[in-house]
Length: 447
Image (tube, rainbow, N blue to C red):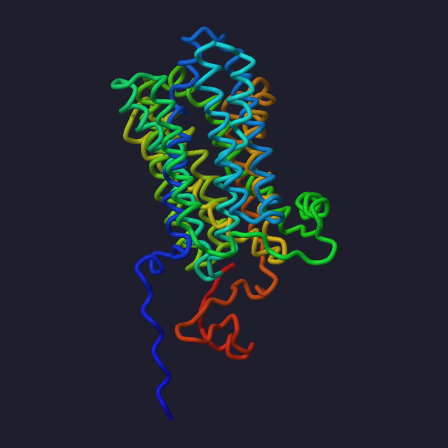
């Protein structure tokens, strides 16, 4: 019998787990998010120095956050309707137009209404671009490497916002000033957006045919009804709320606790925060790969849910017991940042739970991400008075424990034994092979 041809060698990009047709998109996303993150560390004090009161600045950021939460939800819905590429173009256009309004008119005129219009509505831009690309990845990446592809996505996303964006700002502000640095953000966003949208040629970024009864209104409604139409998607979205609720809650209480109660300086606290997110960047990639190896569901449950349950408590109790011991506090902060990334496979698992409506499932997941920005501070607001910081920390730890239980129920439809098929080498894959071959292949897949 003739020897079957050997499979073609895989490119280095493919070996890394990045879909080769989307490789330029990852670079574009990184540059876009660096530009979006340039202002994150200094815009608030800059506007106060320009004469805008602190309550007004807080309201401006609240409107921005609300717009971003709405856009995060709409990104999945619109990707189902228009295709991810058009959604990303829309996000890039919104970001550029309203940033120009903010820079050309609002700041020079010190006009608060124009700031509200320009900066507030600019919040619609980055989620449409970034989460539109997330839907594109979910449509293109092979299921056996989807967790890794999502890990690279979050590596680029968090590498830009806030990490490298703040670093760019710290380097440019002393040289060109705060106002000119805001213009550099526009340049970076435009460069990243154009790289992603002009150099990525994958056809699955366009509008896809819809079935009967899947018009615009049905798609919009479906992105909400999927939460109870498919309870596993709802559970995954709730886990996504819990994922970063403690993070946003800690932004409210931990700076005061670490500086006023524990005894760290503000600079030391900022260094702890930097270490937390630097660790998170690389852990995003790590847990994407781990999810593909040991299972998405297990990774979310044990590294994300259970890991954050422990690390949340350690972040509070280690400095509480050791005082202003910076190395110990640094280890606790790094562990917390790493375990937050244990939830990364949710971006692969949730759309796989609703394969015919991946955009709707990701819209529900993004809705959970947006909700976490409100849930975390709300928990602090309601409970820090009667229970104190200790009680709030235990509430967040309990929420992470609940997410562990939720994750254990997020089985894929073909995941009866806790694993799902992963492709073998060669032309035939276990996903397309007969059931008997899949049972005997010995390949551990994804949960």
